[in-house]
Image (tube, rainbow, N blue to C red; front, side, top):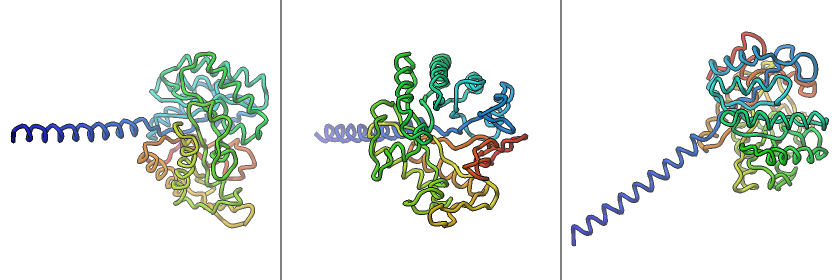
Length: 326
């Protein structure tokens, strides 16, 4: 009898240990699946996506080599699949990088059609390198609801073409909350496989008339709070922080809120490093993915971003493209 009880006790203990081990393994697996990516655009130096020459294959290779050598990122998010940018996928594959590929959509329907076709092409050509797709980036932010049909057309085209990668449309957390507080679902919730949200307390500090000022040392908490908010709104959907960051210059410059005139944000290399590193650390603890904006600073950035638009890169946009220390 005692031997039987001992055997049962040992069996139960073994089962408990196995279950605990399985749960721990599941947690480790979930966390190992989390991505740490950098938003990659090769329009550095004097290049602009709006006019002139497009990035060469040699430049794309050079920038990716620098990113691999000087940073920990082995995943990138790209902005477009045409105009020479399609070389990025072959270059990424050669360097064993994973890619979240954005099919760029804007107000030119004919160009959108070519972009969608090219997106289908590269998705099928690089099924192991391109791991996620997005039909557009901040289309609603730029155009209100005018081109919702273009986003849906892109999603439908990818499905009908048999593209295997999960598909979304990337936009700000505010758009994914349907511009409402508390957060409400949008009509894209049922159409997408995953959700990509862009979160920038720097710009909230400037343009929001409701949210309090978020300094650099609170930015990581702000990022995660927005992810949590969207996750609760779309239960069952994978939600990824697809853009976050902080400008590193002009060093010491301050941005103020347009409503209150309150000085909110200070641009500096120290603050950028704090925001990037603390956000990735908190995301990793949750097993959540994120993409820092951006890999290389871009001089062409529009005038509405003021002096700060050229300073978002974790690497400089001019040779020798020196990068943040990790």
